Image 1 (cartoon, one colour):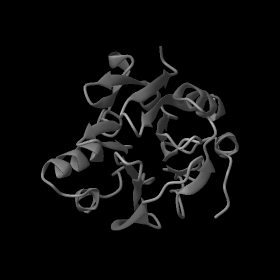
Image 2: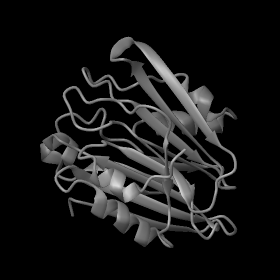
Image 3: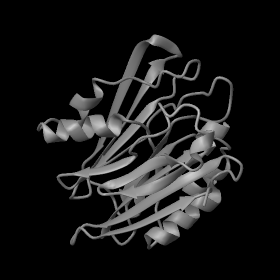
Image 4: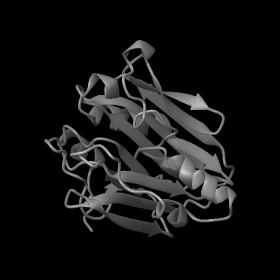
Length: 235
């Protein structure tokens, strides 16, 4: 698979929607996690990431402008048993509860489908970063826009390579309806030495008119210590 430049991918796509990057730092010492959200409507853009006890949560920047919280307010990142869960919806909690019951992320996601936002039927994308730096990604999407059929794809990366990661996002680009992501997660290079540097690369590459929030975590594989960065358009 060709290694792609993450900055160039983002700069060439005005609306990838929501995206997850999981991978390994170039010095092979840290697991890399990134999650971003974008928005076209006032309701979608009226959000910020805030810190919680075990991760982050989306919140309304201006509560008076919130019209429908059902698909935009959720926990994108939570941690359980050393595993970091990152998703684009409330399936974060579905996976979190499954881990509590001794089950796996696959079992959790077999209970879920894509988002009920016709005609887009936005895919649910999810990732799990394990303490050893191995990781999983998945996408739940409709079959060619047919809401009666759910296609579930799971990708497991047991031996991450230093300086590389995988990028999955909800949309191939802008459109009406929005075209769902296709194919395997994209293989991207990760050169940034710190969470701050990686966050700046991603944030500066996202479309200025559509980006909303970004979370980046560098997890030290030896100590478990984390470097976190949050960026919000609304401040």
